[in-house]
Amino acid sequence: MRAHNTRRAAVRWLKVRLARSARPRRVEWAKPCDRGPQREGFTLVEMMVVVVIIGLLATVVAINVLPSRDQAMVTKAKADIATLEQAIETYRLDNLDFPEDLQALVAAPANLASPARYRPGGYVRRLPEDPWGEPYRYRRQSAHGGQFDVYSYGADRKEGGEGNDADLGNWQD
Image (cartoon, rainbow, N blue to C red):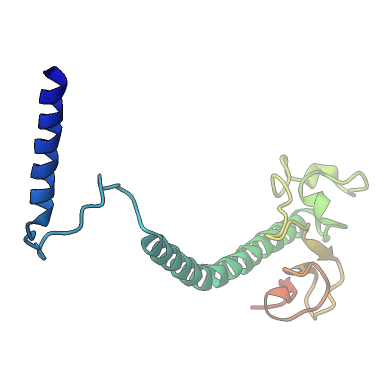
């Protein structure tokens, strides 16, 4: 009898299921499709938009900042040259002659005619390098009509050049 009841229950269950599936369902257009649990995160399109925006910002910054950096390096070199020029003039006033090289501004040279006239501590604490990492150059006899030349070869580190690569010296304004 038990198997008979189980069979009857199975048949009744099947009839209910078939009856339910035969009924037309109401379509709800306003509800979104059920895709399961919603995942949080960004879509590929959103990520690509962010990458493009970052690229544009980087381009704008590079266009505006790099020329300013080059100009700052030129300004620093001119300031260093003016400082060295003033130290050389002070050396000349104290020792009645121009130094043989820039090292004489830091420490008294061995062949100094009157060592007592040399300033204690020198004329500069240390010799600066130009903004491109090279030492400044000094010529005791000027090639540009002055008394001496203090100069840097510029960004290209070679004599001559134009723009950022141009030589910078005390003969220029």
